[in-house]
Image 1 (cartoon, rainbow, N blue to C red):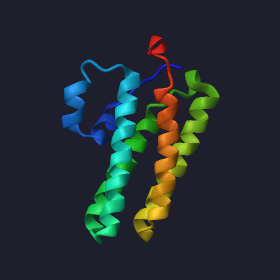
Image 2 (image 1 turned 90 degrees about the vertical axis):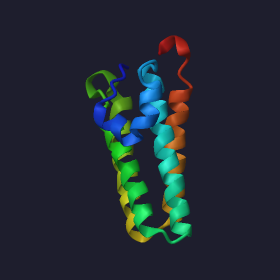
Image 3 (image 1 turned 180 degrees about the horizontal axis):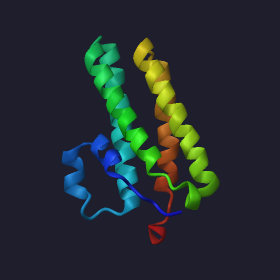
Image 4 (image 1 turned 45 degrees about the vertical axis):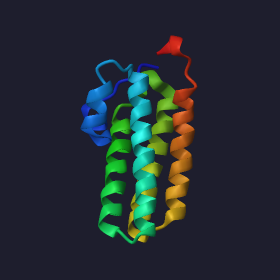
Length: 132
């Protein structure tokens, strides 16, 4: 499956982190970086809920949604086939759950999102370097 990463996805991750690594990173590494960024935003949002920092929680969840939406738009349905279709549906589900967590301040939903993102990231992490 060909990996294409668009600008929207990279902007969701954060300029500073990207600029330091993106020039040398493979598309697979960029996906991993985006996943790491999404996981960091969810973890920060959980802390914000615990500290009752509602505005910052919303900012972190919105940032995570932008990353997930960027990952979604990077999918190549034609070349990715069933895997791309499954990821597309999963990214939609994650986005809906993030919106629900934002409205309800529900840490258990954020825990669910974390597990899903970790599973997806583990799949990327498991791709042997010779296929990058």
